[in-house]
Image 1 (cartoon, helix red, strand yellow):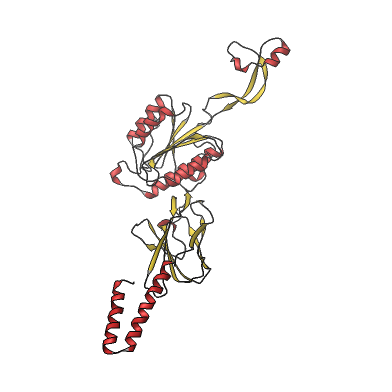
Image 2: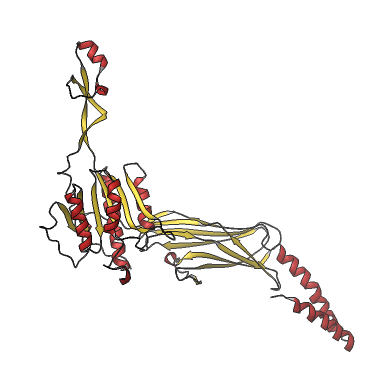
Length: 401
């Protein structure tokens, strides 16, 4: 690396060479003085018109799938680059096949290091395969690009701020894989009673009754028949599931986190959300976990919109193990804002007395409750939980290591 010492050294060589009448030393010093400005000028424009791009074959995948990554650096000028190095920040969970990441100051990330020498108007391209074996909401980049002069005296650095996002959804499996009833995992399809007249499905007309709403009067039919007629609609049944996800895996927060159990809880929640969306249920999600690098709690209200399942899966992909509040306190706070006919589904890896007490209180208040547990150390007492649908899920799918 060049510094002021080189200039002092060149001046000293000229003085000594003149003193001892050494032409070789004077020529060497002159070359050094000539090379330094050339190298400095080269370095000044080394990264001019240099671009770096990364391209992902997919930006949303499920656990177990593989993404194709292509990176490209382009030198769009006549001046060649004797060397260029790109350090692209990558999450450790997305290490490419056959290309280990260089270590960084953060244990959760590393650098995808790439080196090349480029001639004028030349580019280099690298292709990688990234196995996505861990759920997450990942950011790729930014990339740090370094280059310099041919002689290695100077070095220039540029940070490309562009980042790419890769969302790895949790694993989704069938209800049978969780040892749950395949047609009705929550046991509420036969007990649901909120039947409505759907105004989008007219069936005919009938005579007016005193309890009919005036807005349903069919005036044309009334004029034809001479007495009041009202419209008749086909009934419809509305199903709403609100999934309460407990990211706590131990009774007390200070006991830490069981990562494997947490992933099973999130995978189970994703599977149930997918089942509900597939059967046209309005599914919502509330969790006592947070978005990455944020203290904002996850909350998605029930909906049957076409892209609603994608929003739920993105939230489950991003959810962290940080517990913002106990699940029973979260339920107490959030249920007052939820539709009365919704089924409140608690999905948890650990069952505590305080959680059961809150669920019993809500059930006695008239709420529809369901508990899906992955706690192998808990045995339900049906007499205490009367009126609450209880399921003990057991994953039958071997997780890939």
